[in-house]
Length: 202
Ligand SMILES: C[S@@+](CC[C@H](N)C(=O)[O-])C[C@H]1O[C@@H](n2cnc3c(N)ncnc32)[C@H](O)[C@@H]1O
Image 1 (spheres, rainbow, N blue to C red):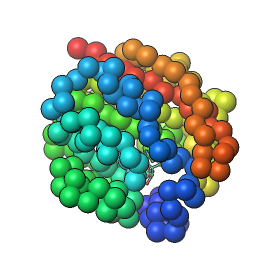
Image 2: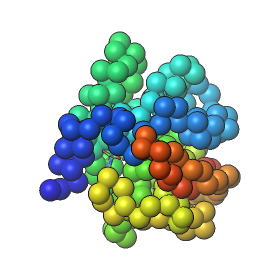
Image 3: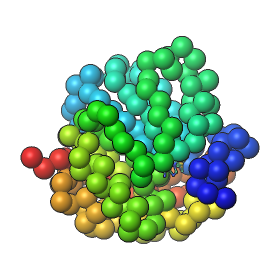
Image 4: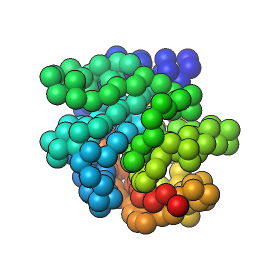
């Protein structure tokens, strides 16, 4: 099964309470986005957003230019159905992030638990080539930490700490804040995450 088929199958067959990454409210992401001090008109993209409720909260907070990208069309359909009419205020992109060809630049790029699935050097380089060129202000990345799981959704992931995350993005971005946090899954297990917020070097 290729990556796209894997994720389509997950979203076809599982509800949010049956997958480990579900959060009722993505508190850390919202906090780091708020601390970026960008205007409500900032262009924000959530990479591998799936059917996360981050977009719901960003809309509630008054952000007006939100894009959600995911490799799974089904994931985005679910998010759109949940949002109802509000979904029309969001741009939705079905794409593998490594193949993403942005037609605009973004002020803020957020990725919780999608980047860590890129386990090959080539894919990581494809990802950073995109962020280097198309992210203008802020990058927020959340991955499993070095204390966290080694697999997610049955797939291998790459774990990071703040140093290894800094190394990946250091040519164009400087870390402004990093933290580790425990995510309690819907099955009451714990996943330790590493989050870092980066500012674009000018
Ligand atoms: C663990 S889930 C996290 C979902 C969401 N970010 C959250 O925090 O709830 C990983 C998400 O990344 C998406 N994904 C995985 N690999 C991807 C890729 N190469 N390009 C785009 N999306 C990808 C999956 O479809 C899935 O929605």
